[in-house]
Image 1 (spheres, helix red, strand yellow):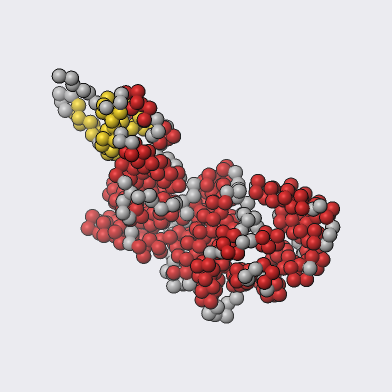
Image 2 (cartoon, one colour):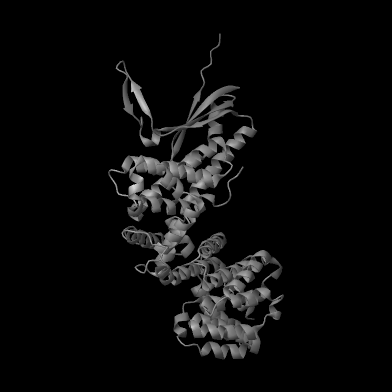
Length: 415
Length: 113
């Protein structure tokens, strides 16, 4: 039997989370060592004896046994989690306590606790996302760097520093306090949103990495939505937005959802089950007065997903949703997407006017698809010379070979 | 056909979860290939890296490890091959070489009476 894909990566986050809970956040490095040891043991014994029936449980048990060894050996030399110290001291309570901490419900809470701890206000958004990817999704420094298209050195520095902040925070975030939970929830949602977007719109040339980022973001959001305090309308909206966009992922031509690509999507490849799940989540998100930006983005994704053909898209609806999004969370990117939708409804000339009217457009100067959108609309108005220039700029800004070949292809179309 | 023992020595224990899983899968694929070709007599066992060494007339007991980490035997397999050259050739597919490890190939002693 073959273990399921990314099994180790997925279990890594769960094991680090539960071990950090038992050892205390200051012993994060020790928790990571124990997890590495569990993987070594799995590698060696599974290779010789075959994959066990329940590989996840096997890994968890290996980590648990190793944790018991460490606790027995080092309890006089080290301090572990302050809230568990008493139970870990006595041999009478040690094993039952550890056993309980490794129960499925406890592990899920530990993942959530770790998620909230990673989103400390002392860390930048970028650092929070990198830390989540590293600790909870089991991405190494190199894998994180390749997902973010950053250099190894930059990501390593960020992760090492963030881990220091986390380990120095003395205690993991307390997820039982409703007030603190609600206060930190937006940051957690935001980090998961950014993680998803890194996969969906990110520049990483490796398609596989991008799908994995989206899947991981979905997995963590679903943990959040299973917690009574985490199951808010905006969390459901976030999960809906991810599901509806992920449903379209198989049909995407590897590039950001700009207009040409959208028109060329093969809709028969949409993941119908995921789209239906997205719709169900969207309905659950509409249970209160709260209208978050996630609600609006999920609704936009739903309009795109539900159209049978690109030309069936309800552009008027999409424009009005972008208007709402501009009111809640204005940004040049949102304005650009709104302008593209207007071009779809009212023609390329109107689209160009809207793009030229974007405030802070200079913040888009380095975004290749800003120039590509201009180029696309100039083709529409018959200004091929201008179009070629815009695609030329986009080509210079391209972040990976796929984008480069796409822009070259578009330059070829300006004839 | 003769019998040989592969002793797996050293090998990095570092790597990301994804890399560890890939290494494990390579080992499984390698064993599978050897087994399908009928070379595996006994897949063998992995060994703990630690243990005790009992030595000399005094039977002095010392804690392992007994060799430098890069030389510690981490497991063994009993294989069948035509001759030593063939056994060596077969060992070259072992994933341990990608991880700074080594395979020691030792013929099982034959007694021709």
